[in-house]
Amino acid sequence: MLELKNISFDVMVNGQKKEILKNLNIKFDNNKFIVITGPNGSGKSTLAKIIAGIVIPTQGQILFDETDITDKSITDRAKSGIGYAFQQPVKFKGLQVYDLLKIASKGTLSLEQACNYLSKVGLCAGEYIRREVNGSLSGGELKRIEIATILAKQSKLSVFDEPEAGIDLWSFQNLTKIFNSMRQNINNGTIVVISHQERILDIADEILVLADGKITMQGSRDEILPKILGTESAVTTCAKLN
Image (cartoon, rainbow, N blue to C red; front, side, top):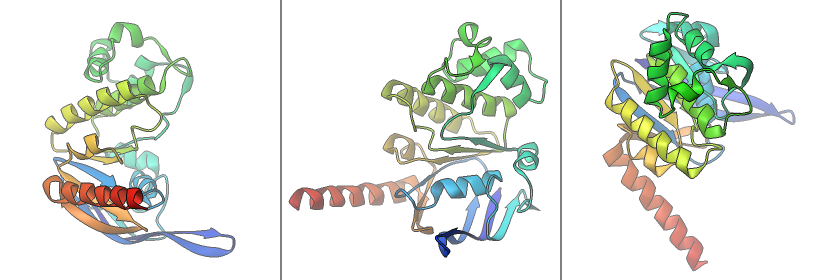
């Protein structure tokens, strides 16, 4: 379980303090698929980076399985079982997909196991296992390879920051199928996805809405999603009337 206590994050802009996150208190239980959503600039990606250890909060405490990880580096958090997928997956010139999967699994992954993880994310293992993780791969291919590395790592907590960013419709449709499969096969772990997409929100167990650095709504999909869709419909109607 992940628990955030009184988390705030500030930055200085033109000599003035700007609050990005404001005193957040959140618990992420095990065996849950959680989607964090909200308007642009609400602090969603900053929150994801704080969980992963890329950004250190200005104040507050982070507990993972009841251990304080507030000051732990991204490497230490990865070792403790936290996986993070970037909006734009990192490319590694000269590094093959199989090498990347082996690194994620701490070097214990067989070729057969690596191929199995690629198959789970909808990639033909024979075609991709020896490919370099470089610019020759499309955005959708890189996204799926990154998800395969997180599967190979067997993370207790997997964080995906706007996984739909920069991929085409076909790749997005496959991405939602992968997430749905991951949700159905959660084994004492937690998946947190930052997303605006209704298809991803629709497979969530819980939805958390951020706006202006604060939690404005949090609850089950059945409770929160109708409120979000109702708000969007109201906004669209008002725009048409004006």
